Amino acid sequence: MPRIKPLKILLPYLWPRDNPKLRYYLVVALLFMIVAKVSTSLVPLAYKSMVDKLGGGQAQMLAVPVGLILIYGLARVCASLFDELRNVMFIYVSQNATRRLGLRVFRQLHALSLRFHLERRTGGLSLSIERGTQAVSTVLSRVLFSIVPILFEISLVAVIMWRLLNVWFAVAIVATVGAYILFTITAVGWRTRFRRELNQANADANNKSLDSLLNYETVKYFGNEEFEAQRFDSSRRLYEHAAIKNQISFTVLSIGQTAVISIGLVVMMAMAARGITQGAMTMGDFVLVNAYLLQLYQPLNFFGFIYSEIRQALIDMDNMFDLLSLAREVEDRPGATTLRVAHGEVSFEGVGFGYDARRPILDNISFTIPAGKTVAVVGASGAGKSTLSRLLFRFYDVSEGVITVDGQDIRGVSQESLHRAIGIVPQDTVLFNDTLRYNIGYGNTAATDEDIERAARLAHIHDFIKSLPDGYETRVGERGLKLSGGEKQRVAIARTVLKNPAILVYDEATSALDTQTEREIQAHLSEVSRDHTTLIIAHRLSTIVDADQIIVLEDGAIAERGRHGELLAQDGRYAAMWRHQRREEQTVD
Image (cartoon, rainbow, N blue to C red; front, side, top):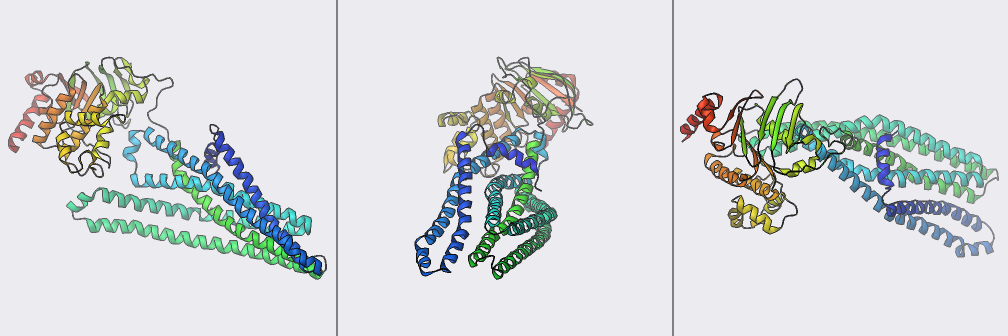
């Protein structure tokens, strides 16, 4: 049988406690369904009466067109009408449920840790969400308005035939339906693994194609188009084999279902024919049995498809519901307060951390960034510099020690208020595939056009934007690929200016740029940083010579600290790094 857990999750969306209007729509839809099925069941009864009347005298034959034919037609019209009205009422419920559940999954994805998003596979994740949300509507509509009506109609027909004919016809119907359902459940359970293989192969093929296209330039640089084509073809070949096995299993299911239905039809028609020859049944009764069997054949045959569809939809929903059940690595504590930033002083006190407990990254890190001052952190790659900014933003929680803002432990305040107080310009700025106006305005979604242009001027990108044919409405492309590195960094600076945070973090914001562009961007960053508490994660030491304090990290610990001149005078690790970079710059020049 289908998993019960997804159905339990769907129940609050089907019967929302906070929306009596939708509950009313659901009740009305169920009533329409009952009226439609009762009307459907009356059609063969009217047909039987017409046949019996036509077999009688002349007077009865004259009365048939006037009465029974009208009843017959009215029953058919009512069945169709109330079916459609049911669909209209239920669409409000199903679409609302799909939207709300999709929103819940979307919020959950944004609430999950950075670790999850670094390790996930984008193609497979988007495919799981797309299939899962589509499956929600499928399950709701199929369970309530396909399976339930079919079972209701079968029960109604069994009672009618029991009352009008005899109990054996009711037994025959129940036996046929029971055998059909049992076979369907068994066969669908057997072929479930083929559907899972198909989904897995499809997700793998989707991941490979997406990964290859996202790395289009890399593929071209190394001339590996054919290699990528072979990888894609290999994954599609697995999908091909899985699809073939899935179709064969579906064919076996369909043949078995048809066989069960056909046996039931033959048995019941033979019973009806025997009743007529014995004089126990009229020709109208024979027609009644035949009409009911033919009427049930389509929904009963449809039942197998519906059950298979529901089962497959539940499989498609599995991954989406697994996302909902994932624990959040970083959560607000119960009763978390709003961060109150009076000055913006940031302190790291005895901080220790490791992405893996077996491999510590930071060990006993302690330093303070006074309000309005700038502290720079330098060190070799892998020393743990960028980890400091991630801990401050609370992408991860510290393993040891504490990080405070104006004396408040950041683990005790809401993440929303913490994030609102910090602005980050990262090394690799990723932009939305939208306009420049949208990307700058993302720093403050309530900003006016004047605010956006003011921020662009402060970031020294306004003139460049105005020189473009579409100005601020220029689209930047996927991940901002239509812009140069310097242009993307200026957009990042502009939206950080628009956010107007109390604390600024520059995480190697210029390390990927050429020397000239770096100097220009660095000047803009210094201008923006004025009177802000600023943490600079730097690779090039020439960008942080004016910092109020420089922290030198080595193997996750603080090796040196001081101002630029003081550290050079110490002739230690920082001085060696400075001399090395100066020689490299002179060589380049």
